[in-house]
Length: 404
Image (cartoon, rainbow, N blue to C red; front, side, top):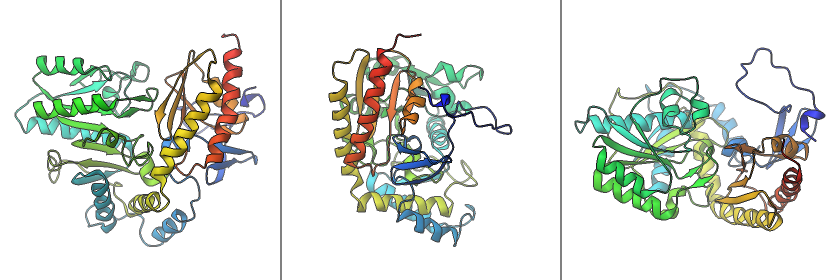
């Protein structure tokens, strides 16, 4: 039964209709659980779309944010903001990169990355720089990031798109080598280490290493979008670290602020000084509240061993899903790393959002056919078992139905 069968639609007469919402309004949360305004309880397998790193109402994060609100929320970047330097230093420490620009979202971080790619080219005498991007990619919904995105459905109606992008398939190094031989204006390669909105598609270790080598050979920037897969989600600080490489440019957001809007662009030595005063800016980016949220999030990840937890509980959850769905006709693949998991089915499965919510589990469906699980990194072993226990019977029942 779909959740809409029991719950009337929530009227929103003054809100633009840009989302297909479930008829649920959440009121509060604790740990990996949330409650709606009707008192129903849900296990949060979505984590605000990989945002709520520390779950809800974390006992260390909440008082830290309360303390910061009582001091300063916003000043502006006309002045030094010590918390910016503190968070930037920590991000540079765990990434091995050099400098950070702070903004408000993943879209803004990706937009800044694209500006760096263009200026990097202009500084080298390339009048019309080009950036290699990917099929099934998602980098945001501004006109530039939408143009870099590889989803015709969300691009429809917003043309003309921005020029200067060359699209290739993921994990096909020959495709990039062909571009290198035919397109002299390339300045950067821009890819998600794990494509989130595209269906939890991983760039292989060997592919990432090969792309790093090509970028070095051709004086390109390697720009790795870690907006969704970074900040401990895969069991390392950043997903590319499993390949033992470093990017030149790394956009971050989502999990960095544990729910407080934040974005960051972390750059290595080849890109760290491309921007100078006046080249880029932001009103709200790097504000004291967001910086405190980032500082505290990284502290708590370390103190609670959440990198190891994400790796271990993610492996256990994937194992439980694989065991319970083994041999089920219509289950195409179970993939991902750490607590970024995709279950691909043989047909569109958007109906499972409502059914899972009715059963007490929040999740999402991306790329039409892929169930996405990106719960908080504090997820316990018992809660991982609960996710599998709720979700697997729903998948089996759905696949047993005759398609419409």
